[in-house]
Image 1 (cartoon, helix red, strand yellow):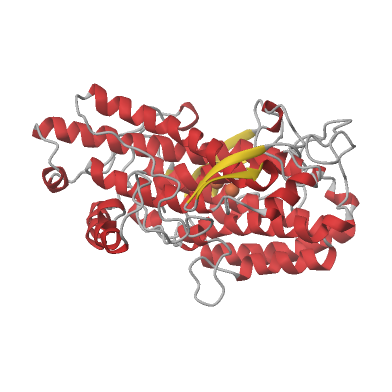
Image 2 (cartoon, rainbow, N blue to C red):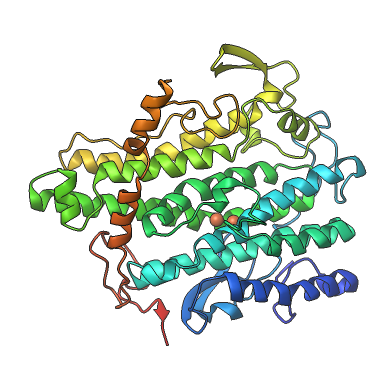
Length: 469
Ligand SMILES: [Fe+2]
Ligand SMILES: [Fe+2]
């Protein structure tokens, strides 16, 4: 079904034929807009931003591009096409028809899963709200705003499910999604990573590389769900999500490129000299990677989890790309887990968070390989690495243990003394902050980052991607 743009809320779910639902969502809409006004990008409401807007859920040509003022963005409800005859692809009810309504016995679990996913979407917009004032270029500013409006749309996606399938509880949860705020002392967002401040663009690139990639893995596992509306919603969200990770991967790549240019100019890889020259030294970038990667790894939950087992067995949440596996029931499988108490054999169903974390880490490696190739070609020994998944755990069997990024357990005072060798220290952060000078002349870049290889949607790099009035 095509998207109806004539309506107040663009949608491809035939909202006009469900007056009650339509009224409920039209009631929520001004609350959303008020939230955007208060918590969205600060001070850029009058700017014309070259944004893409979803106009179809067809894989070819799903979006149109044009100048839009962000508060006028057409946030809507778009589900991927229904697949006729779709059956549950994993768990104890494998092979049975998928559900078009929420099964009563899974209602509270599904609601919790949807609320937890939904909470991350507005949270990231809040985390990024001040970054526009420090942008390295108009190209980057546009990409930030593109991500922000799409995270807003992802909130709409989850709110639609809550309103359409969870009655009054769902409507209350939708209000709560606008009431919690990132970093708020009284009403924080649900997950820790989404309460971390993002106050510079190096953090933004790491966040979009690592944390949006966690989003990709969560969405992929929901795309497998036996609850068909959730599956369809997440399949379309993944289309948008790819751009967010592109911003992270190319952003870090451009930082590496610029740093290598500076190192070449200086004939030195001395971090102090690189910094004095206004670039991000590679060991500093490594600290940002350590911080955001380890923080994002927590989002997968405990290595051993009965919730993960139940969600899988009940057909609510699969593994990303479930079809690539042989066994979709997992009643007889186990996984060897390295715990502080030694190696343990854990029933595979209980170890699914770890399975997901491992496939996520493999996906994270792709960018590192690319960046390291650039460093190698430039003739330097330094290599960027991912921290061990035991480093800085605040959940699971390694919680709170003094483990270094290589995965080695250390005496606690060694760990504490050396922590700022591995994650950004206050001085590192203030140095990075000092680099963040706003550049808004079309085609110009801040000195700490290389220009991208190409512009947006085949436009030239010096196109005025954001027209500031
Ligand atoms: Fe999202
Ligand atoms: Fe995202």
